[in-house]
Image (cartoon, rainbow, N blue to C red; front, side, top):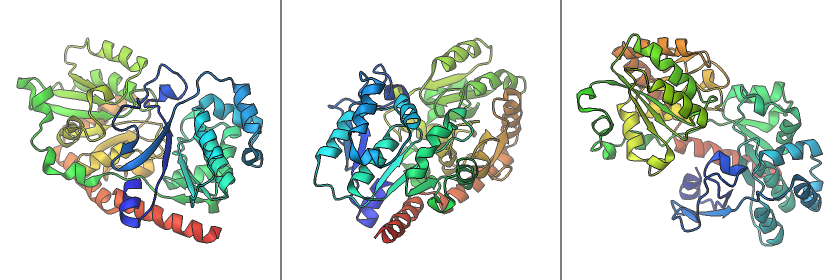
Length: 406
């Protein structure tokens, strides 16, 4: 979106972030980080990126004391309990704080941060308060995940000038249960690079030819794309495979995304089944977000299966629809607003392997239904969820906010 705001609306966007690549690195030095010699360390698609290392070897008490010495922090009146919980979530980036406090030439019009419940939200409020500019937060609030529901932490959202919710369900949750003022919240959904998934540039690369056995090229392809954990439904998908094989043997399951120990343990069990055909990719196997293997998998899949409870929206559903395939999600959280049941996808109970199997079997046995759902999703994405559309809505929000802030 920053690329579109820069090219279409003449924005100057400075991006500040940590050097973490995976979630583990937010709190643990054993996690994956991007190195300074990496070509994407300082720039991505002509956008300048300011990356800072995470402070792992600093105590909670030291962090709290440092914050208390910052005037623009103290005037925010954030409770000690709230701060402690955000510090525990990480990532604490002391060098970034020092950078902003020592720099005297900032000329930003607003500060926009993402991802609740991480410490960068505290940092963005400090910066906004320091330069007396409005602050916006897109929290991606996973309101079906118990970890997000701590009242002491949700109070931080009330400090922002504007909250961008991805769905009306998210907005209503924040208003009714966490008492964020309704007038502070705007609903802007997520987007997708629609043309990439429609592009013919990837037509010379065929997923099944490269990863299915020669005599299996006519097998169905069920795709999962996301973090391979319990929250995203990946482990439940694995557990559903034996039930699916009771009715359909000729099917491959393709998993794309970072693995977890729990996923790998369940995978080792499922792979022992006679008919198990599983292709498993991690980020290490891919060259980036638009890796040709990933795009080819979407374009050749019969359906996308991600029965998650941890999505504020679920961009992967948009990717699947952009490729013209139907989706199956969980009937929980924001997903029922994103997926229109029996119109562009199907819904299942979260963590229910048998129901997942039933819905997968239903789609795999009905080509016409798959086509109808996929085409309906594709049309909906093209009219509502391209990044150009989302960037335009965001631009208007920024413009109106700045007018009211004058």
